[in-house]
Picture 1: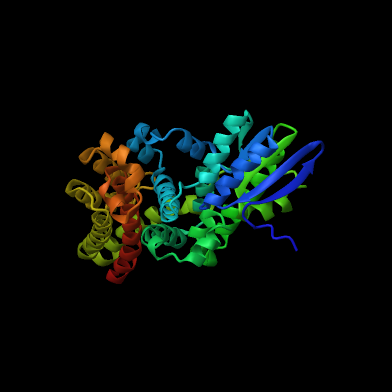
Picture 2 (picture 1 turned 45 degrees about the vertical axis):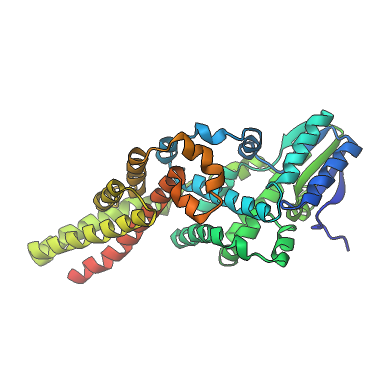
Length: 389
């Protein structure tokens, strides 16, 4: 029986008069990069498809893209988590590659280089990483999001413990699947979005590529899925949609603050001024202290920690504003990222300490940790308030 996940194995498919070659590669293998170069030189394909999206392609073409980052804009557009997640994933892959003394994604870099040398078209056939992460985030509940964030952070310290058999497994898996394997056991939706959907997306994009002879360079873990979906016509638009928030989720954003305010009012009427005042005190303390603790864990500036403590009790009652956005903006003003922070970002994301040292990543950590603290504060405060009654 054919081993469809064998790295460096070439699979031949057809569509009308077009000939397709699907090369399953290992993202952390020097041998795969060499195989890519030799096949392009031998076959001279009209088009080379690479498992990259536009943002990851630009990261390869433009090494200094971080210098144009506007961290305030990232916070205002509510993209702090997506950027932090992207950096954590990049860190994991870069550290694995460094362990093997190769460049991360070397086979994709080689595919682009060899395509340029032979005059072949380059087609980017993977879904935008931001869409993939957004779909993943929207499909997860609060506890799942907490688990994902801390799993990604913990991964920073796990690379040194990876054994040879783990690396061999990674050569046959998607890098996202490797990193999120443990989380995926309790959250099967991750596999559906990170792997299955991308298999379909890759298959359709490769099918749409121009030329008579097309070579597709993809991670070996996607080969079986691409072949399985090859004869299907897939609507790419459906796979690029960021699902809107569920009506119940949107409703709860307004219902919960309204219910808490109603609880305050009820406390004053039923228990008098003392009970009502105690409930407000508990609300302020629980939200403020836990949000401030979140900012403190991110090693935020003292002004940022104070702003977290002051903002959280109010933002928790306002569905339009999050405590983390306030603290993130205060941190960005208090410790405005310098050019050296952007220039060193490439290296700082390789270490746990680096994420906390670099002003850019620390701002992202402040946003995420403050929001988590504020959410936990609400969960702690409500039962305490009810006890007063």
